Each structure stands twice: as C-alpha cells, then as structure tokens.
Length: 327
Ligand code: KG4
Ligand code: ZN
Image: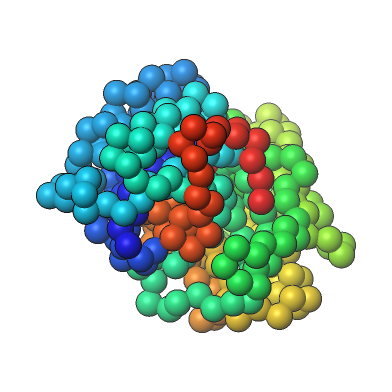
C-alpha cells in the first residue's frame, strides 16, 4: 500500500511516498528556516505563505514517475502545530483526496515522530515500548503496548526541550533553530575543563514530567554576569546541553525501570543531537532506537508511516486542523 504523506505543522513542508509503512519511495522536505533565522524563531505567517507556494511542486516532486493511480491513500498531519501551516497541509490533502478519489487518513504529528523510528532502521521496534518525543513544541514520554495504544507518562510543564535549545541559542547570539548550533558549539568545548553546572529541574521525583524553563533562566543569569566572550558561549552551549540531556536520560531511566519495555524510541528534532544519541546508547545499549537524523526533524515519511499503522480514516469533508492536539 503506497501512502502519500503530507506534513506542514511548522516551517517545513514534507511530502513523501511510503510503501506499507516502512519503505520510503521518496521524501521531499522544503523548509522556510532561512526566512526565520534573523527573527530568532518561526514567523507563522511567513511559514504558511511559503508553504502555499511550495506544497504542489513538492507533491509533484515526491510523486516522481508515480501517477495518482499508483497512490492508495493520502495521509496528513492535522495537529498539533501552527494553525496557518496546518491549514495548508490539511486543505491540500482534502482536495487531493476528493479529486483523486483516495481515502484520507489523519495523523497526530506526535505519532508521526514515534513512527519515524520504524522507518529505515535496522532494528524493528518491538512492543511494549517507551517513546521519548523531544521536539520544538513537545517533550513527551509515552508507553505503548501495541500499534494505536499510547499511555502518556509525562510531558513538559513549561518549555519544550527543543524550545529551550532555541531560546538559549538566541540568548548567546546564535541563529534559529538553536539545536544544531548549540550542538556544534558545545563540541568545541573541552569537557575536561571545569564548566558551570546548570540545574537539572525535576530530575528526582516519582513522576515523568519535565521542566526546561529553569535551566534557561539560569543560562540567562550566567550570561548576564559573564564577559560574553566566545569561550563563555561555548561553555554555556556545552553545559546547557549536558543539563538537558541529563534530564532526558534520567526520566527515561525511571520510566524504563517502572514499565517493562523491549525498546526505547527517541523522536523529534532534538533526537538529531549526536551527544544525546551517544549518551542514550551508552545507558540503554541496543534497546534504544533513533530515526536517521533526516527523519528526526519534521518530514512527510513519518506521517505516511504512522497513517499505515495507526492513521484514522476520515471524510475529507469532516477533517479539521487541530493546533492543540496532544497524545
Ligand atoms: O521535530 P521538529 O523538527 O519540529 C517540531 O515538531 O517542533 O523539531 C525542531 C526542534 C527545534 O527546536 C530545533 O532546535 C531542535 O528540534 N533540534 C535540535 C537539533 N536539531 C534540531 N536540538 C538539539 N540538537 C540538534 N542537533
Ligand atoms: Zn515535529
């Protein structure tokens, strides 16, 4: 079964054709990230306007030599996300479903990140599993016994992990999105040198919730009192990344001790972070599964895959964008 997946929840327009939920035939991602760099975050209207321009050419490109007759269904990420961006994807999917006379599946974007771990990985994830979804808008720890079953164990109470990377980057003068730049700068810091230790909020306790705004405030205080030199920037990038990763690993460890899971999946933009990958593999070994770096950030393939396993068939006349959708 070939599904055309459409992803447009934030600044990316991701279009992909995936066969039987696992085999990627094409994966096109067009991003407006460069237009947002100077603003330190995504400007919603700019993102949506760009998506209107690129979505049809991206669909053409993803189809390649395939004809609409070769596609069995259309899948769209209908939330959570920015309302203008979501509307572009959802309305395009509805129109295609009607014109091509194909079934339409709606997919929760967060489920998409979970299913990114099923794509192109050597190990097939096994249930029951834990999934840590760390993106720019969400930080969720979930337990799943089977396709379609999801128990939300905990979420961030304030900033999402990726959002904290973005905010810290902005404070020290790096570009949006902050994650890749923080990671790069952190890698220049000699880990044998003493470094400031930022707090690890909520690291102890018997719940699985997260908090990242406290780390961010400590960064701001430290930065304001510093000489704002390049070496301070590198120290902050390194120490912030260490603190954020410690929190993610410690919460995952507690959940793994309580819930019997065969695999731990890590998805969302922050899953592209090499330090997080290295430390997760050190702690959990082969149990942990990451998507490729390309599939960690938003893309249409994860939406097509999630649609195959857990998508909800919807009437094109009834499906609506839902900006505040959650697990
Ligand atoms: O999943 P995603 O593409 O979009 C959302 O669903 O939000 O995640 C984007 C987030 C941004 O906050 C970005 O800074 C972060 O993922 N990110 C990273 C890295 N690459 C992207 N965070 C840490 N390290 C990275 N290498
Ligand atoms: Zn995402």
